[in-house]
Picture 1 (tube, one colour):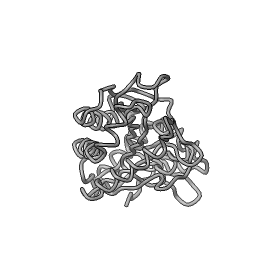
Picture 2 (cartoon, rainbow, N blue to C red; picture 1 turned 45 degrees about the vertical axis):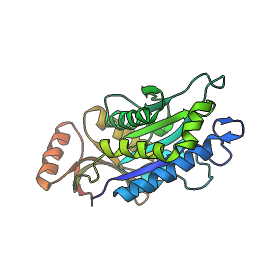
Picture 3 (cartoon, rainbow, N blue to C red; picture 1 turned 30 degrees about the vertical axis):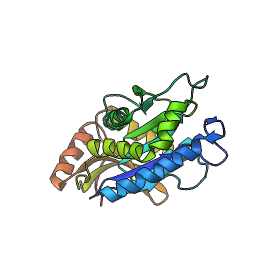
Picture 4 (tube, rainbow, N blue to C red; picture 1 turned 135 degrees about the vertical axis):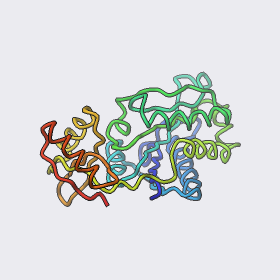
Length: 253
C-alpha cells in the first residue's frame, strides 16, 4: 500500500502570513505545495492537500483535516521572516519533538535544501505549534528561507524547480514508498468527544504504545497498534489488558 503524504500550504485566505515588498507568504507556500505534490505523485506516493486554493483554515482545522485524511505523514510549508530585512536567512525544519520519525524526515528535507544552497538553521523543537502538536502522524513544518531576505527569494524564484526537487529527494530518502499492510489493531475506547479520544491517545503513547484515532460514525475510536497478524493483535490485547484497559481487536482495513 502506497504511503500517503498530506501537504499543507501555510496560511491562506485573509491570513497572508509574512510579507515583504508585496510578496505574500501564503502565495509562496501554495506554489511549493502544489509543485512538490505533483512530483511526489509522479514518484508513486499518494498525495493530499489541506488546501489547493487561496483558502483560510485555522492551524487546528488543518491538523483536523490531516487527521481525518488518514495520511501517514504531514508536511507544512512556510517562509520565515526576520525583524529587519536582509538580516537573517536559511532553511529550518520544525518538529514537535526531536528523536522521532518527524525529526528524521525534517532533517532529510533540510539537508537537501542546504545542498541546494540555503544556509542551514537546523532542526528545532516547537511543541507549541498546533499543526505539530495536534496531528496524529509524523509532522514537519519547513521554513523555506526568509521572505524578507533578497538572497533567499532569489534562490526561491530563479531556482524554484531545483528547490522543489531537493524537497522531494529529502522526502524520498526518509519515507518508504509503501507502508506495512498492518491489518489489526486493538480498540481501547470509543468517545463522543474528540478531546476525550485525544487524551486517551496521548496516554497510550506515553506508555509506549502506537496509537491513533479513527472516526466511527458520530464517535471517535482510539486504536492501539497496527499489527500484521491476528495473533500479534491478540498478544497486544493481552498487554493492554494487563495495563488495565478494556479492549477489542478490530480490523483496520
